[in-house]
Length: 166
Image (cartoon, rainbow, N blue to C red; front, side, top):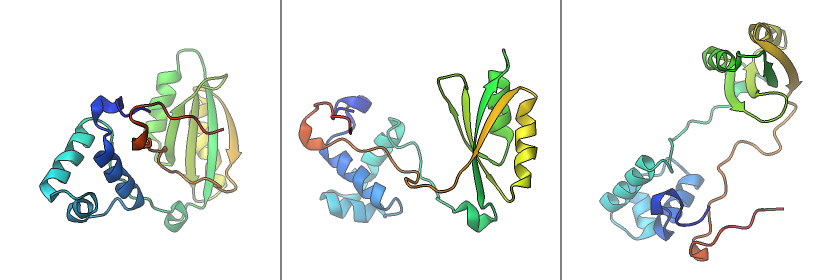
């Protein structure tokens, strides 16, 4: 991503704000303002522009599924029958145990992440999707890289593209 991306919203100050929010999204605007040397109203305006511009899509609460009695996580790849892709996506949206649904390339079209109370619950979830296609399921053992934000561009590059990590 270059600094011209996102309608010119990623200047040095906004990148600094995003880094601060990445570290702690609950920081008050007054604290953010102090860190970037601006007034709180000016920072609030910048955050609003980042939200309206689609850079900040929302603020999330990160709850451990195990604390909710959902210690089992699984990934289900779905290969919909012809004409059933939209129906599978809608079913995923309506299934409370599905916490993420990604449309992917390859033989399978959708990847679902589910959280369950017990392994026996997996059959119930999979069976709902089998009416519309085939599934391949993997149980998640651990998350060596937990969900995180994508890397922010380095503002000092003055608009040059970031080199991808190898």
